[in-house]
Length: 442
Image (tube, rainbow, N blue to C red; front, side):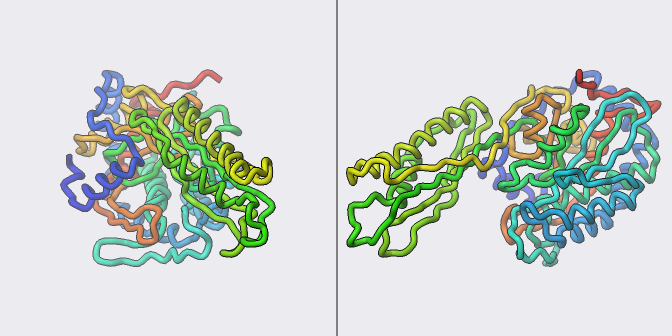
């Protein structure tokens, strides 16, 4: 594999696979005759060759964008300052009508020349890091360290590089392209930005999310998740004088112990974790409150539903068991609240948009691929039946979602080049190719 010649990248891919973030299927789908024909014509077009060269020449500028955007804090639900700057940069590139929608997404429309499909190219504005996190980029050797520099500072910068290449070469597409910076992709943002995008716009025919780095990674399926806050509430009391009163923390402990013994299928991959716990007042008090954060994920919607039913039954039974232990029914209650819902979904392994994602990277020298499921903004369109893939922004890195997240711009220009080729194949180049992406029935 071309990119895997870099040892650091190999380590990143191995870490990604071992973490379960993506389910790997290393054999790429066959490329159909229509897709191959389209790419042959696109790649032979002088303006496209010039655009690819422009992206490579733009590499340092793209890295500056990445650093500057990364250094604007964008914690969950507080992306507005970064969104405003991203919109400003799009306006400077000719999108005078670039705007923020009601949810906070940044949207810029590049009109096509004909009655073609509508394709969204997106990257997410938010990070997982809380307000007050130091996001100043620090360079050590060939690496740039900062929370969020790869996820998704690189995606935002790659999107801007694609726009500059289109401006430089004046390529006209048949279909419309929306360039979008989404809010709420991370953590309890719960994909609120992309959900709002598809709620408010029924004319989107295809979707590409720029998230992650490697261009040999094509995400064509959606790992769904369901997240719950499970609170136990009771009367509490003094640890000595009120002994015999049911305890909220004991009920919570009963739930966690039984949840930990639940078995899930290896395929389709289905997982869970009690990620957070809190509660109690003091060491010498029977707890009146306790709370857990439960995360469940699966590449299968039915398996996720089965796991949820089992886990919530355990949560409710734990309160009953704690009350029964002290013969005080109903004193501790379980209160369950859904706080995250990312839909699961799948596309055919040889779907057209998967072929396009693979063929674009093959044009840049990639031979081996990791194709499968992850949890990204593409979850929403995939679950809705809209063709969607998540592609890498280019370069290498590691430590995503960690304070020591790092990025190195090794062959980084291939990320936006990959996106450009996939985009042009899907929406068509005026006078060269018709769009591969079909218009959906509205």
